[in-house]
Amino acid sequence: MTYIIDLTLVMQNVFWFQEVAHHPISRRLIKLAFTTYNNSDAKQFLHDEIEQHVKDRNVFSGQDATFDKIVELIERYRVDSAEMFKHQDLIQGLNLDGDDEEWNTSTSGNPGR
Image (cartoon, rainbow, N blue to C red; front, side, top):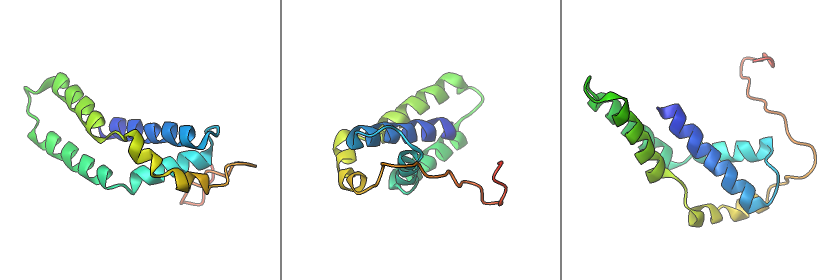
């Protein structure tokens, strides 16, 4: 549940940053979208609500209740246009031209992972 919502909201950020920057999607843009979401207050509030939902769920809740909660949370925490345009200066300051950067996501030193 958390992964679905997080991924959806990060992908929304990717779309908005791409629209504001008028630049093709790149690793740099994806990293910016992830970092922006990951450092947001909304992420913590969202995760708290998901945790509470999971605690409150019972055997009779069913899959529909979880699906409905996912839709509700995505709607509540989605980024609106006005909020994304606040980041326009940040995006304009990025050098999105030239070679794209490496992913560098491995912390174990194993580049294959």
